[in-house]
Length: 297
Image (cartoon, one colour):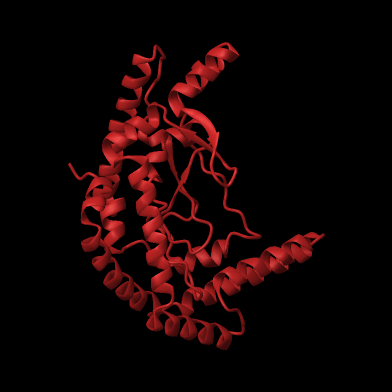
């Protein structure tokens, strides 16, 4: 799953098309696991108490757990599809995720290589073969549409007019492990409210000020990482020759490296503030969290 801003090494990219839908379990709760939208430097690395419950452990233990959960979701999806009369072939875990180009890099190394991923694109990830693609491609169009509807549910629009899928074997299989979509969405909404509370905490705002002052001392005057990215995008849109593009890429890298350096020490204090709020949040929403927390056995 690739993160475009506030990146940290070791992220994984999600494959397109059918495989993206089938590996959605890797991001179902990942949305809830975002760090607070703060006005200062890069986002806090995902190591908070709530993230530990919603996304599971990191390292080899976490990878093994996610692989097992992927296998269980795939098996449940296949059983559900079979009940509907469809042939569904589980996707191997190694075919569903791929390392990003930044995997194994430190934050500083990633910033020096890719900046904020605005004018500098990392190479597209290479995924394994999806065992369903050829099978579905060979079906008549009406059967292929029925197969996809069985897998992903019916497509509707939400209150904002965006296309969403309701029901389907994939969601049913995920709900058996991760809890209902309604519970997941409630956690996401509550987490956003929590982030808003953290963002106005006096200590958090003081850290924002410290980050901005450090960045200004390094020669870059911005209010936030979001402002940096907006500025880079605006300048990228105005570029019409390769030399100007290379100059912008060089500057983007310099700003990104400075942002990481200015974050030294700030991240640790941010994590302490987040932990304080999240432990209270977990205690106040224990029943809901228990329904959607990542299973560990």
